[in-house]
Amino acid sequence: DTEVTQTPKHLVMGMTNKKSLKCEQHMGHRAMYWYKQKAKKPPELMFVYSYEKLSINESVPSRFSPECPNSSLLNLHLHALQPEDSALYLCASAAGTSYEQYFGPGTRLTVT
Amino acid sequence: QQPVQSPQAVILREGEDAVINCSSSKALYSVHWYRQKHGEAPVFLMILLKGGEQKGHEKISASFNEKKQQSSLYLTASQLSYSGTYFCGTVLANDYKLSFGAGTTVTVRA
Image (spheres, each protein chain N blue to C red):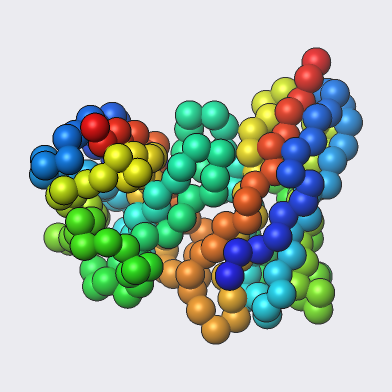
């Protein structure tokens, strides 16, 4: 089973809202990732968790706050976003940080 | 550091072959290849770890020239299902962050 699930599938939020994206995997993977993807662009790395610890933060604005409650779950808390934050947010997991990554279906976020 | 991918786009008829190239100016630990169809998530195709290594997945194969820091993805006897955007991702020798190339859009027509 190489499935990574993400909820919600679509999210529309105002600039003053607080919302969270959720990602789950049951493959026993120890590395989990958040990416942001704009239309016709490659995925852009935001955060990497390795063994439930944040190991990479790609200078992401503080209005994005990641959380890894356990080895299967990864959340991305959103607060006071800007319209330019509208994008597809992808979660991925891997057996380790040097291994192939498996992507979830993504959350399509629109900030109004 | 983002790898350089070429070509930007390719149009094929069913049964034709194509090559997608990916290169880096820095020493690589690994090269990953993914395919993303419109509105879907990227799907892992293969990973290459050693110089000169080749791998295959049905009629899609890839090579990695460690000396040149280059990888190529070969689409052989293309099928309609091969349409999509292909991304190479590279991991540097002293790092573990995956950086994606700009992507190559492949369109296979009947």
